[in-house]
Each structure stands twice: as C-alpha cells, then as structure tokens.
Image: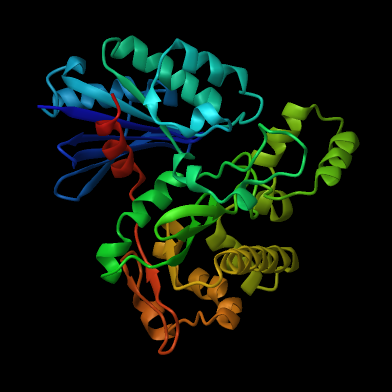
Length: 384
C-alpha cells in the first residue's frame, strides 16, 4: 500500500495530506490562531474537524501530524510512507525541476536563503524534520516553477544583461492543476486561457494550449501585482531610496517587500475582505489601494492577451476567487473592453463552488478550485 505524504509549509501555517493511488485519504491544515496551534483535519467524508493541538511551534506540526495518522489507523508507522513530496519556491534553474532531495540540493537551497527569506528557511527546517522522522523515505522536491519552463522567451526576459537572472514564475502547481482540467471542463482544450490566482498570494498566468507561457510573478514570488503583504513590482530605485531612508540591509529590504508591503504596508491590513469593506466606508487609503490592485491585475491580463493575440477563456481560482463574488466583480469590471463580461446574478450566488459566470456574448468565465496538494502527489508519483 503506497502512501504519499504531501508537505506544503508556509510562514504561518503547515498543510499536509496523505494520498494513496491518487486519492486523498486526509488533509491537515495547521495554523496559529490567537497564539495557539490549531489543526483542521478533513478526511474522505469531507467533514473538517478543528481543534487545538498540544504543541508550541509549527516546527512540531509534522511529528504531531504523523502521530495523528498513526492513532487514526491511516498509517502503521512513519515507515509506512513510501514518498514525501515537498513544495519548493525558489529562483534558479535547479529549482525548476521536480527531483529527489539530496544534500547537494539542500546546500543549493541554503545558498539562496537571502533571495526568498520567507519561504526557504521554513522549507529547510521542514526537510530537517523529515530526515529525522523518515530517514529512509524518498523525499521529492516539487517545484512551484516547473509549469513555467514552457514560458515564452520574451516573457522570461529580464533586461539586466545576465544569463542566469530571468522570470521563473510561481503558483505553478495551482496553474498546472487548473490546466489539467481545462479539456474536461470545456470539452476541448482552449487555445488561449488567462488564469487569475487570487488568495494570500496573487498571480496571473497566460496558458497557450494548456502550457504556461507568461505570468505576472517574475524572479521571486515577491514580484508581480501587489498582494496582502507583498509589494509586487516596485521600482528598483524606489526600493533603494526606501532602503537608504530606513537604513535597511538588502535582506531587511526583501523581508519588508515580502511581509510589510502591499495592502499591509499601504493600508495596515492584509485581508482583502476587510480592505473592500473599508473602501466602501469611504476609507481613502483603502479605496486607492484597492483601485490600484484592480488596475494592476487588469494591466497584466491585457498584456497577456496581447502576448497571445487574444484570450478565449478566463479562469478564476484560489480562495478569494472561489469565495468572494464581490471581489470577482471588481476585478472583472475593467476587462469588458476585452469582451469579458460578468453575469451578476450567476456571480452573486456562486460562493465556495465551481461554475461559469459569464454574461451572454462574453467569452467563458469559469470559477475553478485549485488542487495544489493533489498536483504535488501526482508529480511525486512519477519522480524516481
């Protein structure tokens, strides 16, 4: 009985899932809530049970998750796990491949901690825990950028005169899971699809015949449109001026760009739902930031449509797009010049579900749930 453990570590949470033969047996979402560690466990019946866990830090989440899996009878012991898949978010050619983790790979990750100071240190700690708990189990590094190895050269291009610095793109696992379903959903593979992934992170990707050819995120996941806490495409000289003004080192500046910028930096709040409410209550800063966010996304969508010579399908995915009709309406409103028009009634009733929400005469607009964990399990199965 082959069991794959999928590991998706974040700065404020951990996501784990156990798969057998492509089927998810259980998923666990562990996060910090009001200073305590809370787990929400969803088994095959689809019911989530949330409770406080007796651990003090997220570094103890994986041992606790394995203990739960053994107690529940999901696995006999840690050796029952035949593969472990870990999501990797990092720039560089080495990290665009799905591959077995070895010491060379770990050393290479450690060398670029300064480039992705939010993601990489957490992954390195999780890999260390995995080695202690499951020393003989193959660990697969699943790249969040591999989907964009088909990126068109003009979209990957960075004009610094370097052969190693290019746009790599991220959220690739999300876009890959969406791409895999396009043929099923539409009955035929659309030629030109633009996907809006809007959750804690935000990116927009152009898919040509199902392959990633352009994306809003560039060299690292701090780039692209503004996000909850990330600044997006901030002018390089503006960043240097900010560093000088606040006496920041390059690493401090990157941490600021990841954790204290975007909506949080400009409005003091990172939750889009609260931003929308504040903008509606005539909060000027929230209104300006929200308008800027909408315009940035519209600009990226228009640029990708131009790159592909048009757009045939729009897909909306990730938490905010699936759950928030008001946000969908705001983001799609300026895109009417591209033939993208929303049916308000269909949109308003579609909450937490999948479905089509375009108006008559519009190109198709589809809300789809993403399945990054399932995509990771599928990839890990094929890596040896």
